[in-house]
Image (cartoon, rainbow, N blue to C red; front, side, top):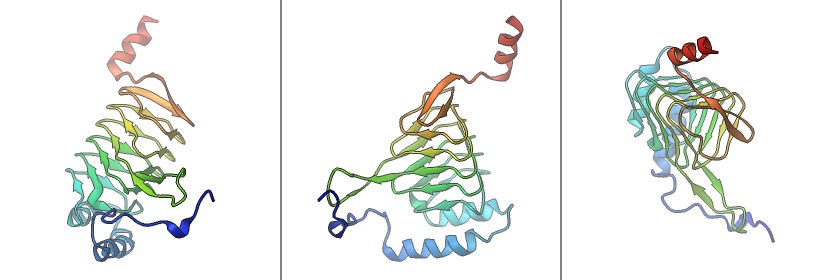
Length: 192
């Protein structure tokens, strides 16, 4: 047999909190978080912090964002999390400062070991470093690091680490060119 889901067992402590706290978060997320006013970012930050998330100053997080386990989330100062983004935080998800995760992106902090018949669940940390931009509809696989200042193009599927200060696109995602700051870009263009 390739896969016997009747033998699947959730590892003890995998969720990081009791079933009561997990259930309470899911109720709060579906009500207070989801139905908060569009510009009530401070209120949503407070709710996340109440449930153990580490959220920096002036983070913008839309009410349509879904977060599985907030106690496994870290978001640096001045970062933006766009509409309908899913932070599937089976493992830790660490988002740096001045970082953008655009709408409809999916950060997947866990998967299953398909090689074993009991299909065990596993978690792996995702890191999106400072000043990175993950454009809309991007999938980021478990264990991936997006380097400092990297840009991940829209609808990319990222299955391996992406280097710092590079524009990366595609499925699978690949680096295609350096991300140059505006003054350097103007100098390069004028020299051409």
